Image (cartoon, rainbow, N blue to C red; front, side, top):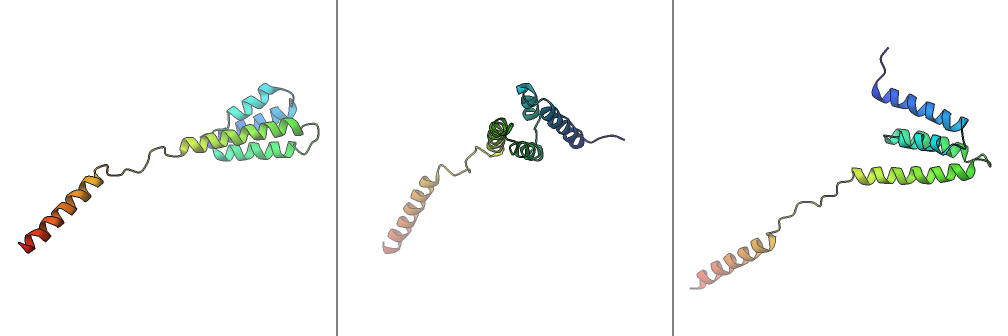
Length: 113
């Protein structure tokens, strides 16, 4: 049975969550977990795990710090997805308006001549 990329990624996240749970004091384990979150569903799963760990008084401080890192990571990903381009506007709009007014003025003057 062949695994899809998403299923494989989710399995990796599950293994990394277990590694963090087993080796809570290891900063490297936390870093590996966060660095492998590549899509929003994985970020949500990892955040749910850290929220669960934050109810444990012995883990609350680290879990809170990791949740802050996750929030920053999610915001950075959203910012990267957002288009930084402004909507295209015609930079010659002022010139077109002036030309239209001049033509209108010319037509009005020609009617009275």
